[in-house]
Amino acid sequence: MTDLDDRFDQALQDVQSLGERPDNEVLLKLYALYKQATEGDVQGEKPGFFDFVGSAKYEAWLQVKGVDANEAKQRYIDLVAQLHG
Image 1 (tube, rainbow, N blue to C red):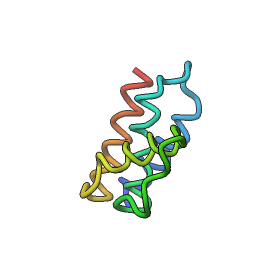
Image 2 (image 1 turned 180 degrees about the vertical axis):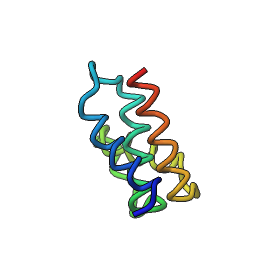
Image 3 (image 1 turned 90 degrees about the horizontal axis):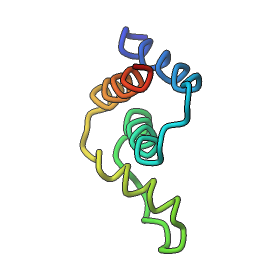
């Protein structure tokens, strides 16, 4: 494991201990960066119109399409650090 992987794993743990729940926009950013870091570009078809949560997640992940896995990990780490303030 690299230092980046270690810091990413730590950020995954740190996000669980936030003082308060982030708003939905931040949660979607965290989700998208996690998916991009671990799975790469968004795959599959966009969920149906009435699947609001699935559609929001898909759209958020689509926003980071093309971002390198290491860059996505770093962005995730940075975002969690901001949330911990």
